Image (tube, rainbow, N blue to C red; front, side, top):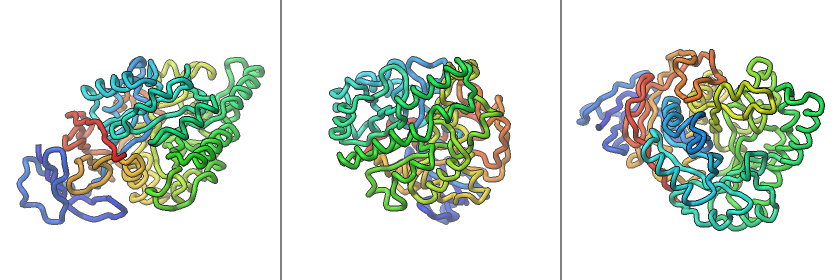
Length: 443
């Protein structure tokens, strides 16, 4: 179906202007101020609404294959488009981990049948899969994920020789989870000796400390500088790490970049008392000072991308004692809404929100023809109602796990409609279609 969107306030490439957008097939055919007479099968009057490019989330964990009791590509992409995310890049810590090209293509086959949003999947690094990593087609795969910190099974890459070889040889983008595993293990044992398995959740940032983060991220940055690697450090959680990244600058000229996640911007360690293990993440949510400095890092362009790190677990799993409770939580449906609240509070411009969540992921990962409202680009678009208050509750959560750390939160803006590759997939609280396509890259 063709769509003609009229009278929208368009936010795109640092500008806010009133305009119309014509979608024909998968793509944006025309952008203008006077398209009312243009033939189209479906005309939408967007007066009073905001039209933005679809959000591109560079870090999600959708749990398929192997962990579909937590979430699946279908259920989590459903929640994503309801939250204005039209494209995502998914991590390799599924079961089995995505360590081979065959397992990587298995994910793409599943997504081609089930994903409502556009998709790409990282190849995962292990200590022993260098040859498989080097087979990656960088025109069809977003990058390499390295867990330089605690994870499950053999996802932790802790062999210095392997890391040096990967940083020297992999020609694409390397995304890293940076925490120093020996420090975390030492701290965990100290707290276990004191509390057993029932360590208070408030101790989480004293186990996964600033030191653990900085030791690992500073090592990754120094190695990338030495080897000329395209490095993207995920989920910055401390003020100290910000010194590792240059302020300002042209993103296209940066080889070392950083990401901040919604939970590190919204929550701080004072929230553990109320929310407990629901906000147990790795890296840990830390102090209010860290929270404020990370936000400042976004405004200074030390941090280039805002993402969710959506990582659902069942509520039963999350309510376990500290040691057994898994880290991560569902965020794709509410991440954009949280950033729009910050905009309404005067903390960030809406143009900067769109830059960090839509434009910069497209530029950083060199995604073909997405991330912007441009004629000829794919029609990945989100229509926002900036004056539609709603409260998060179990009846409107679309992630399979059925809970959110944002439950009972009042948001004052809402996603009204979402288009993915020209298909309207979400409208007024209902999933109505599927438009997900494989992402391709200009590498």
